[in-house]
Length: 346
Image (cartoon, rainbow, N blue to C red; front, side, top):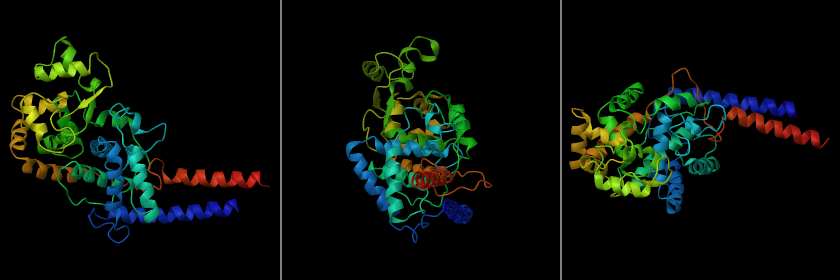
């Protein structure tokens, strides 16, 4: 009987593989699930609304999770995998800061109950990011869908590919260029997602106490804001939280860019968009500050471009049944458990 179950499991994954090949060959389209799972967005939205009641940070966290997924191997859900040897969750940019995994698990479980083996974890994360922006008062857009989930994570790439909170502007631009994104509008527009959410003290405390090893405050940090931040972060290395946007912290708007103009960007990687003399990002910050509609329009286009970052063409993915585990491992675990029960009953 165990042999038969292994054969059935193997055939099941052959079917998934064949489906994955055709899935990967199709172009991303907002209508991808219209026939196979027409309520996918409504299901994701409902779970997000419930999560946001007790956790107002979750909207910003899910947008960040999508960003951190797409910059490593493309938008393939690799950040959701739990393999202890390769998981991206403990990479330096993610460890003890990336969050929202449990909410994605809830979305996946709900969708498996309604349209099993259909919606990829990568697509769930992409839809959740768009719905999070909308829930916070930002723009909506038709999300191109049809992504596959990777069968592996890449911790080493996560450690190097993601833009850092204290990196020079040229380094940040290089990382955007490496994944095929624009080094001016995309950099500024996607950075605008810091219009909501929180940051831990250790991501900016060097600007308060020892900027560039000088022992002084960052000269590009507003002194009034710095004094307030020192009360929140009395010493370096703390994980205390404060708002990325001190004015409208839970609203998706263009206040982030107004903050940069008065040296109230919390992270150094934010403020350098405006404080780097001669940078092409300065004019874009000014445009977005004075015209929220322009920011929203460019943000949507940049999010769609980022969502189109794909894994290499010769990598065949799958639709994971559990966002934390590749399907092959689920199959092995299930059949081994069944075999163990058979042995114990004979």
